[in-house]
Length: 120
Image 1 (cartoon, rainbow, N blue to C red):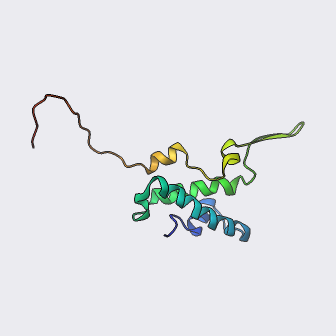
Image 2 (tube, rainbow, N blue to C red):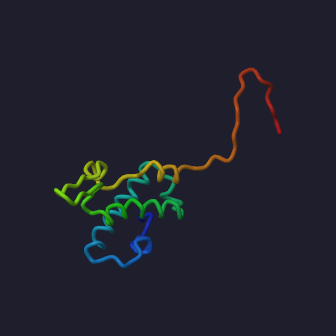
Image 3 (cartoon, helix red, strand yellow):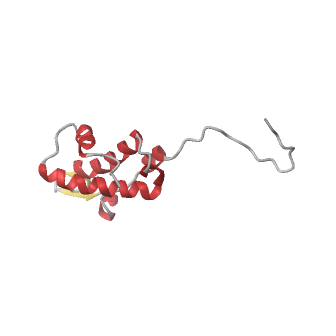
């Protein structure tokens, strides 16, 4: 199974080339992000889209841009807070990203008990 995004896709979104350490980590993270997406949305295994590539990259970029998982930081009497999602596990799919991957319904319908059948 091929990953939903490539290292080149990731570098394009990062805006620079990946370092050698980032390349090694990103390779594993892209594979993991793909597995997380396909676990919830298996149809992307056979038909990846631009949206699935973008979501896969976004998941990995969260880790690469913030490797310590800091959510907040303070200077005087220094303190910082670790993002709860990062402390539970580095990769995650946000609700917005999941919504992006869900199919869009193009037709609405109603079921009315006892109503006559409508044929077209």
